[in-house]
Length: 508
Image 1 (cartoon, one colour):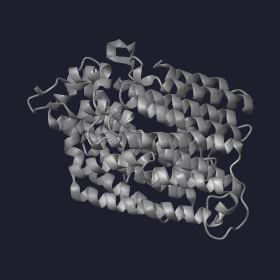
Image 2 (cartoon, rainbow, N blue to C red; image 1 turned 180 degrees about the horizontal axis):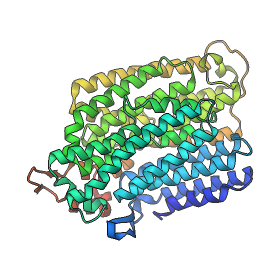
Image 3 (tube, helix red, strand yellow; image 1 turned 60 degrees about the horizontal axis):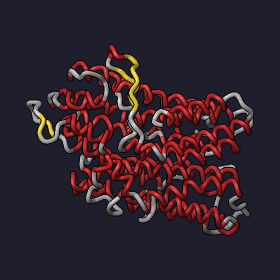
């Protein structure tokens, strides 16, 4: 069951690659639906371990416990409408290759979320880069070459430093292998200075893929130049995994390093949240607006992660899952609007609600989710991230909350008014049957995470316990529960861990 989350989309990609468009679209859709069905059972699936390079302490280790199952479920749900759009609205000759790249991206992301071996995590981390680069480079806009170059420079530079930390981690700590359970007690016993240096290497890669200001400029060009259908943008939205990297690896393994860098990272996250929101209010085209809006969301994810509190870290991960649906949905809606007007310029629209009321209503609901309206997907994560951040730095997070929330209200209302209100320039067709099928899973996911977040937060909390409940003193002696015991608790008894007091929705 665990390996199926990787194998199903990978096999579907191989099969779809050489088929005619219509057949490839059916294969891809069946593959994504099957992956989603597998994802619904991942939370109770067993871990998998296969010998790979035993002499080097490297194994093919997958563990669906905790946050992994939540993120895979949200990403798999988002991929279903994404594949539907790609199969219909990417060119006849390009569609099979595009669909194959999407499925390879999904398989690599699922592997990244499931990996419990650090070297295997790095393999999947790099593997996800390839399909995202190819989708941009082969099917992007007129200026895609510059966007690819910038994206590649940022990604490879950060990944090189991450690799250096990975290679140094086991020899310095004396861990038996690169498995998370083996690394956890060994790396926590390292002295604080060593932890800080190793943490810096991880942070270089994770900050780029979060992304944090000022390492965010690749993101804007990435979205501006991607395929106008919005499909590649959705894949890019799923690929904002820097927050997951900090949460799942850097902070649990190197807590002293996390404490040393916390003031700086928390400040950068707050600046990212405010800067992204303010920049979004000034954009004149839909793609740029959503790129900066997504950046602001990632700043909020960073605030939660770097708060180093249970509420903040739980909120950050549920927000990461929620924005897959809300931001992904907005990019798919932007593709629908582009097909109607052949442009992303906001001034080319206006009054669309008069002739396309269903499209306007759906866009308004997804926009509400994106700006954090209570009862919809983003609100629980945003609220908990800010609460956790406030506990860590009240004044800084008060500034971030005020700036990002006000900016979200401004760009949310302004976007809807410029697209759908005012004088109608021309008639616009409303949603057709296929578009209803495309948007239905997005709306279901938005309501699911907005109205019933507690079970997912409880799963995430199983990993948060490992990151925050263990303390190691400067002599290397553990206090409280042992790291090995916590790792075993995460793997075998995650359902018994209660949701934190700040989890919305009460008892799971």
